[in-house]
Image: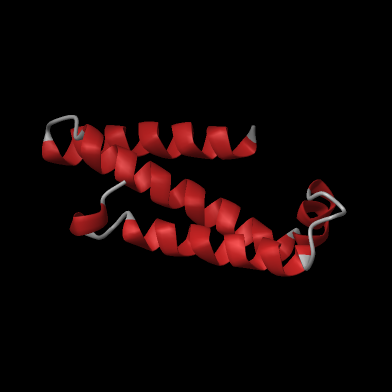
Length: 89
């Protein structure tokens, strides 16, 4: 639920700021910023709340902690990719 609130909150905030300073509603910019912010928060959580995320994975999966770290890195890379015009989310 928290990632959804971060996503929606950052989307609406960016949309409002774009409207205030640019004079128009830039949905693409707001969506990219919101996705990047959400991915940054969830990616960082993989490194700060590792043990809780390990508990979400099935017992049969080997190297569960490594998988949590790996997916955290993937989310952080995806957040940066949202800022690259070629890879817009």
